[in-house]
Image: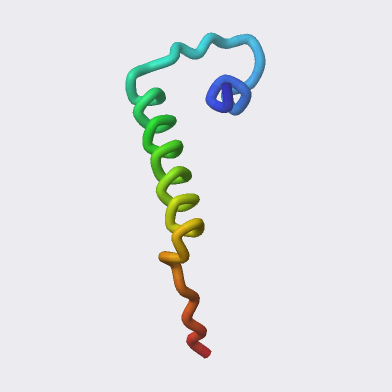
Length: 48
């Protein structure tokens, strides 16, 4: 939907396999980050 909105009014956007893969990748990254936060697998290092 974001692709269609960015292209403006009066056009057609087809859903492609690449769009599906982007969505799957984004969901996997979000899931992995939530898992890492829940298991305290992330740390923050300050570098001035």
